[in-house]
Amino acid sequence: MDTALAATGLIASLIVYLAYKVLYRPDFGIPVRRKLMSGGLHVRRDQFAEVPLWWSNLQVQRAIHNHWKETLRRNALGRPGAA
Image (cartoon, rainbow, N blue to C red):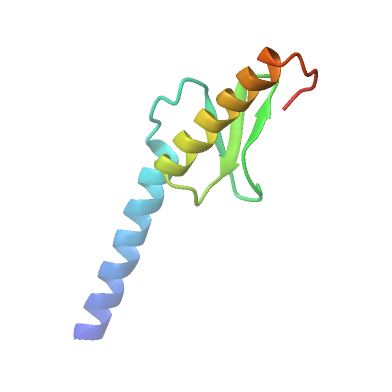
């Protein structure tokens, strides 16, 4: 009986966590889409970013910050190229 209750609690907490990951949308300054089969940050035409589903919000925030910093650095040095 105790193991069934523990398994039910574990499954319920997993469902709540996944719902939170999918439904909660913090503002990163650019729309972020979470993809299951994504290998890292992919910014499309500076309009939206795709990140792996398992990344935390802090990882997404840091990756987007680094993307903008690198984009500004590349433009300041006059190097052409898209990210």
